[in-house]
Image (cartoon, rainbow, N blue to C red; front, side, top):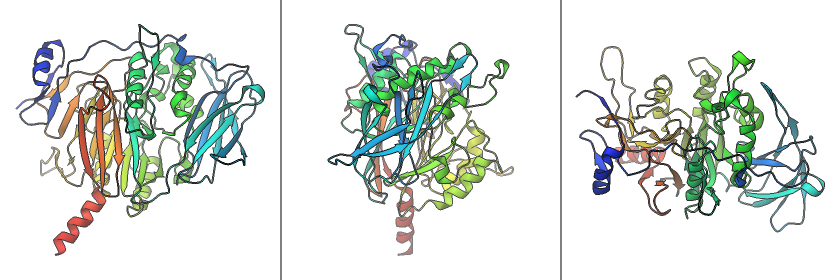
Length: 495
């Protein structure tokens, strides 16, 4: 049967109201949930979500991420607009009167005709696990106070929840009747990407915030501010985006990865250094995992081992990213961190027409290792929709056997594309038809996901579309940990 493109639009809405979803003859479910086809508009810069904090040179754009490999460190970053001020952080544990101090660094950069504010980064080390800390930045009358909670100690049976938001240009929603903005928070693992600065992103964030299964941390799958969508990559949009997400990322760590909208490559105007704004503004603990670049690195968090890869850096054989990953994967101790998660921006498997097979060369390069080392799940963004695959692999091909199609593989990862946060470019409706067998569920709707690790053997993933009540799941899957499943299978085979 030949392959065609199918569009999900108004012609399907009546059927969608009656059936809810369609199942193709050789694939999984292609949802035809009724939704609007509009493009998400950016919020105006005078919106309250972009408001400056009061006071001269007040710290703004505060954000945190993990600051070491084990989870006992935090990188606190913020901006001062008028002068450097202080790079010191004061912090203390809840129910403690002992205040400690750490001093960071300050950096600036120029991009075309833009000069950045003063960007501060301070790493706090040797924190206690599973402890709430308060912290202050700023000096004098313009100090600002926030808090965060460190993860539990690394261990195999430690439950932890990741939030997942595939935000394709942050969709911020303002209720036209009340002019109130909404945003999403997390208290478990949230995976998010393609965020931007639109009305729909805010709805996604709010929807996620209201989910009772709160995330403890965010897995961000790339595409932050979409500043490159504006003339001359207007870097003021990096500042507005930082103020917008502060309400969440100042209180819980976002684990960063870079997407195509972070490249900011504009050589015709003298900007030939890729990722310049991103790498100046968003520090990550890459050196703690032996990486030579902030664009690829790893961390441990509770019972999970998270590997962040760069879809837009060299990844062929003998490149720095390749060498690092080849040395990194054998280091993962699945008895300590049984859940192996990979985060990258461009999906290796996607059945949407837009960006179709863009990740193919990276898949050919690395899929064999994901199967060999039993990666449990790969989270991606880029495609402005939601999709989940079956456990499949396509690694058997050689030039003679003709085995060039994905096949069921119980020890292959599940690939989840969650680029559906609410971007200014709108959702993607055109899909490969008939739905390929490796695609388990796909739907072009805005939403968020929760990856809830229960113990060393099981985790639960749920995807929630924005239009539903927060407790309603549009798609879900119980995960059986591949490492422990392989041990059980080996034990059963030996009986």
